[in-house]
Length: 148
Image 1 (spheres, rainbow, N blue to C red):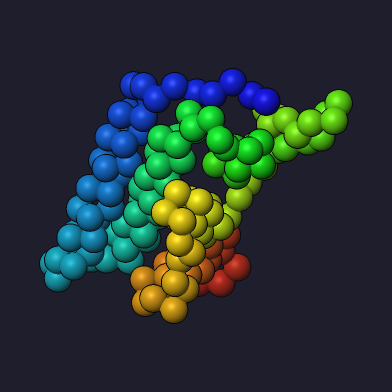
Image 2: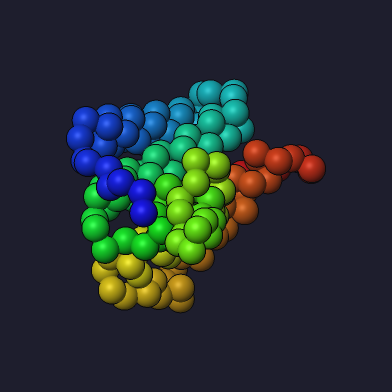
C-alpha cells in the first residue's frame, strides 16, 4: 500500500489557482458579452477552455483533500490521482505512471464515494456538463469549425 499523503500547502495553492482560473474565465465571458468587442468568438473559446481548466483543478483539489484517508483502496487512490494500479506480489499497488480518468467519471466517483449517494444523472446540471464537455472536446480536438 502506498503511503498516505498529508494535506498541506499544495491543497491551498491548487484551490487558489482553480479559483483564479474561474475568475479569468468569467472575465473572458464578460468581454464576449460586450457588443463593442469584435473578438467575441475568441473570448468565448478562451472562457470555455479556462472554465474547464478551473473545473478540473477544483476536482483535483477535492480528490487531493481525501487522499490521506486510511480506508481508501489502491483502486480508489488510482482514480483519485489518475495513476495506474497493478497487481504486484499479490497486492494491488498504485504506480507512478499516468492513467487518465474521464472528468465525469472522477466527479461521479468522488460524489458517490464521499457522499454515499450516486449522482442523479437526470439533473439538468449533469446534462449541461455533458454538453459542455462535448463542446470542450470539439474545441480541443477540432475536426470541424466549432461555433459557441
